Image (cartoon, rainbow, N blue to C red; front, side, top):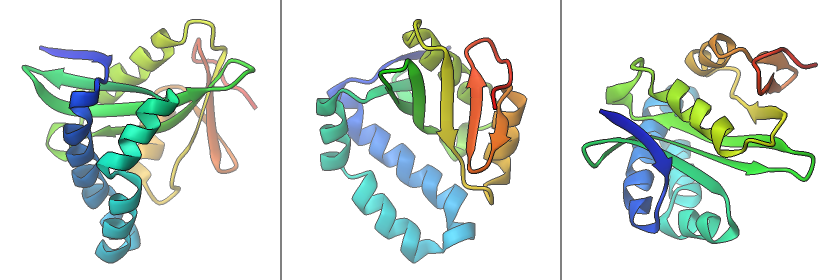
Length: 153
């Protein structure tokens, strides 16, 4: 059974490993291995993830029997907007509803939020399609969705 929950400090090593695998799978064809390795080392190191945790970045994880399958992180602006920073599912577990569950859990974790924004790499066609299926609309480089799924512009 897959559950979503708030990440704990002891989850960060598994989050790092999941992000590395996801980034290699997703972005290596777009940016190349050298750039992906460099970005992953900088953005997804244990130190960077721990710093985000200390700053209060909201991070959720999806797990099954103690195995991490996905993660999402966000910040909430003073205007109540959820700024989704990451949503990744391990490459071996895509297309099983985990991403949608994480997105729904993120919205539920921020009940006063009225809007969700995120940035998506336009060449990441599967992510663009995922967010479209979730009710987001493309607005320049930023995709947006109200908490009820209605389009915003």
